[in-house]
Image (cartoon, rainbow over the protein chains, first blue to last red):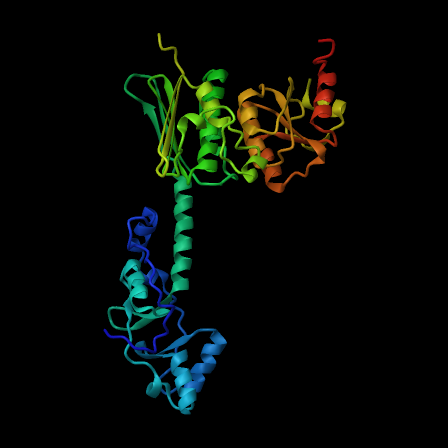
Length: 322
Length: 114
């Protein structure tokens, strides 16, 4: 494959491509490996035959608001007419001549079963705005541009989020000792106040169904709620996991950042880094961790600035002596 | 006292009352949700300015049957929907927090002569 100046370029500044660094979110890296070019490309193509005039191609590009048009006959790709080609034809006075004569014929094309990561590398390497896509039989089947990729990733990420929300891990049963065994996991997103409190509410409902004493239920609900809100307000998102086994409730709130500089200070009554916006919603009073510690039989927090925080709250639900 | 009787006694606007017969034992006044989580007694109505879904979530968790919004605060649609889903009553008053709580105290005979 070779390149041509006519395939429309984008700004050539050096930037990092998705998939090139270890810092990209894992879910995105998995997506760009899993998705194929055919999943992302536009397959509803606007094309012209070789005998169409450059002026007809220009008119079509204007009507469809596109910046290039493939030259194709019966699925076979012959070339591409870009805005550069049109300008050249206008300057040279050849706008009434055929596309077959003035199109760009040296193209970089992608194949439809290539992973999206491959397409991203091509965008970065060649700085073109779009690539024609062909199948194994060398038939033109689509065209792909940055907008197609952004749209596909947004759709896939939204679906992934819904999947995670709906897939709160549930394992109930007997832990072998004959006592109650429950496990739940709740992904918590940053600033998702609309859903804040839902995890704690679900935990409370489960405990009510199991007919635990109301005072125990309230303590566990307080710990769950405060840790859930902390993840929502202060972290970049994390997971609230809850399990009951061996006669005790264990809630663990784990996030990957941004971490707490002074853990001792953060556990003081009234200590808060919340902004005015958060406070106006009734959060960020600096009582969350204090509340969790107060209702817990065992409490532990570990954190490091720049990395994550893990808070653990253990509440005994059965008399330890029994 | 039932919630319905308290609403009548206090002159509150009943925006949403899923269970008029639920028993009310008192009131708790706070705009800090962690404070509500920590101290609001089961069966107390929450008197607050916080007109959003998180107030509903907190009331559900602590067993508060109603939210009394002071200063006639608007009730957003999401809050109304959440309260309807969770069975939490939504009431409005032109009073401030102090006077709203005072009315509850009088209606329930709490604090009189203490």
